[in-house]
Each structure stands twice: as structure tokens, then as C-alpha cells.
Image (tube, rainbow, N blue to C red; front, side):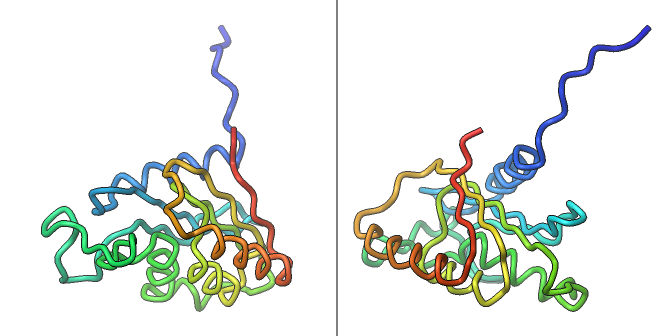
Length: 161
């Protein structure tokens, strides 16, 4: 007798669900973000990250958020943490920069600083899902980030599945 299994999720849905799950580890009291870096050729996860404080420093859920100009400065962004983890544990030494490196972000599109980091890292595509509304003042930065991504031939796709 054949069992009736549900249809498998698309790769985008699979990786975005993982990014959302990773966001649950975030220590910010206000916003939760998760990131998954993959090699799209092999569909292999290379690294993950979430927003939280640097090692051995107090987290927002311990001491409260430290806000400057409507931005928590206590934490490292999810995509930054994912790249740091990849470099720290040796994964970046094994990455052929010709591979299709994608990043899935749960929470919001990347900020301007993260866009610059992702460009230098060699990401080919950024797929993001908005679960947090944009903060005041980010619009001009987002517009400039879009311009930089376009010049770098990096796709920015809002996930809506």
C-alpha cells in the first residue's frame, strides 16, 4: 500500500524555513533574524547565523537592547554571524568562489553594511522574507544598497511563498 506523502517543499521554502528556525536563537528582544548560506550547486548548507551579541558579551535578553539612532548596537547581524562562523570554522577555505553562493534571510532585507559584506564575500543571490517592518530612516540606505547590488549583478529577491 502506497502512503500519501505531502509534496516536498521547494528548495527556497526548505532553506527559508531553516532560516526562520535559526532566527529563534536570536537574543534581541525586539527583532529576530536568521541567515543560511548555501552552495546552490550542491544545495549544501555552508553556514548559519542569527542576530546576537559578540561572544562573552551581554545579550539583549540579559541586559536589554542598546539603541542608538533607532538601531540596536549590541548585536551582530545574522548574515555577518553566518560569514564569521564560516570563516572561524574553516569552511571558507573550501569554497570555490565560482560556486553559486546564495544567502537566505528571515526577518528583513539586508542592511547597507551587510550588503557591502555580502558583495565582497561573493554572494550571487540574496533571498529574504520580511517578518519585521523596516525602521525609520532605512529607506535611503535600502535604495543605495539596491544600487550597489545591481552594479554587482547580485539578485535580491523577496520571498513570498
